[in-house]
Image 1 (cartoon, rainbow, N blue to C red):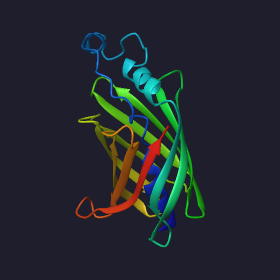
Image 2: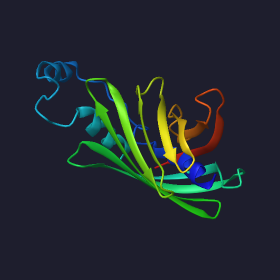
Image 3: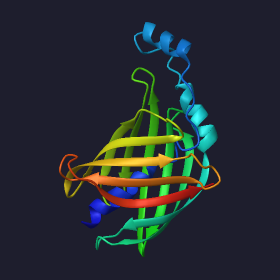
Image 4: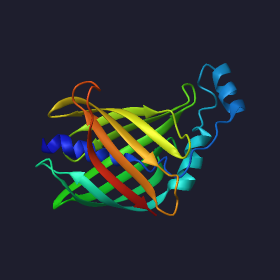
Length: 193
């Protein structure tokens, strides 16, 4: 179960939305809709606003489930920047889960047509995840993702809470191997700039 658990920790992919959830410009979205969704091919302004608030280095501490299915101390660093011609917020996460190293790359963008945030992740254990979020509500955000690994496809939920800026961004993730009937918590981290 080592590979899957690494995928689970990867869901920390996070903080890209952690510090900002800008309001959508209705004029820009209307203009894009009239142009058949193509608009003037500029990145959505939500991305620049998110990157401005979230860019930089975040230090994370907490616990994650290791390959023995026990919770172990976890530390990591998330570096966030605007990337790929300003169309994606790129997160690079490097960590130690107990004594085991773990890395992932996440790319987050905003889709003005659906008004949803989209995420793609790849991780050092060979797994990958894709999913979306409706965005921030009450300084909290939830991601619904599908994770793929050597164990197959599983559902994953990642939760981020920014309601107490002094405490940092609190995050936790859970997976379901039975299509959402039962959920298992696999990590809990707090990240600060």
